[in-house]
Amino acid sequence: NPEFLVQARSSDGVDEIVPREVVAQSDFVPNILTFTYTELQYWSVTPSAVTNVNFVFSTNYPLSPGTVLFLKLPGFTSPRTEVPVEGAYKFFFRNQQANLLAAENILELEVVQTLYSQDSTVLVELHGIQIPP
Image: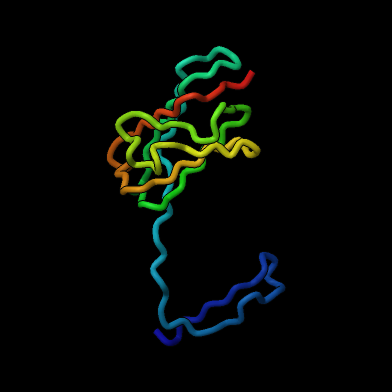
């Protein structure tokens, strides 16, 4: 409809951010990928122990190649910056490993083939993680 107009204003309605204009079409807005379930399982809960951690999750849509998961683990460390990924899903992640960004306490997992995580939970085994003291 050529009479359809849009405009953006500040929350108080004073400032005009985008002037009123005719909109002929809109682009498709893709759905946003979200986690529908997450869980961390520890093989040992002894403080400062080096153990394995399971990251269990499901999502609302499949994970496409190139998707990067960032897992924030405050206080956790590892003797390696390349943490081995084991288990049935290891081949879905680049080099079957997670990269530890130690300064940020983040494990980075890059998906290399489509992972249909919306149909069931995915269990990612992360080996050699040190639990906080």
